[in-house]
Picture (cartoon, rainbow, N blue to C red):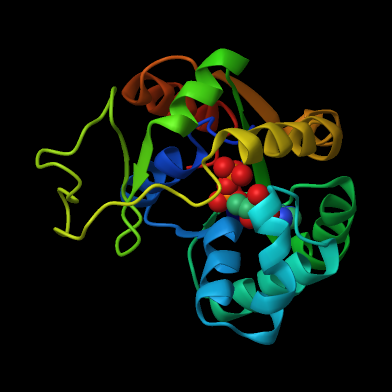
Length: 218
Ligand code: ADP
């Protein structure tokens, strides 16, 4: 069976940063469905045009479109020795489809990592977040500033704020999370490890690795 790690947690909980760390440690293929949709929008594809308004408002993209993008991604990456999913599944409907159409077909052993973070911290993290659009590195102006102002340490590209990291959109994203994504904690309970995501990023990572070893995932 192939290991498949799902990172679950609210916007700003550190899923993207932990995905990058896990990827370099485990060598699994990773996907951020947020990046998949942003690249559709950037490319102005027909799906991109359809989903752009949802992202601008901080709402979740319709299930059928995300499922379509995810199925294409996993088919293209089926030779990987394992997977790390950042941001999928994110609704109960997506989770049912994932269990029904994907887990068996790709012979996956699923382990869910739930990053639990206090609300105040989530908001301040998103308001101080900077990202590199080229190599996807994530920075934070207070807790993890780049060495040179607004420049990526890894690849030198100019850093940006995410378009949806603004106070109004953040409120909607958190509401969407609470009503549509939080129920997945219950759904995946049997295969789920809860991690205290308030801690610094290195400690979160070591707790995730411990959680994975207990589930014998690597
Ligand atoms: P965050 O977790 O901080 O909201 P992401 O980069 O994971 O950031 O997602 C950005 C946006 O992409 C979401 O607000 C949503 O509109 C869309 N999106 C990503 N993954 C999904 C998904 N599985 N289902 C529906 N929409 C999604």
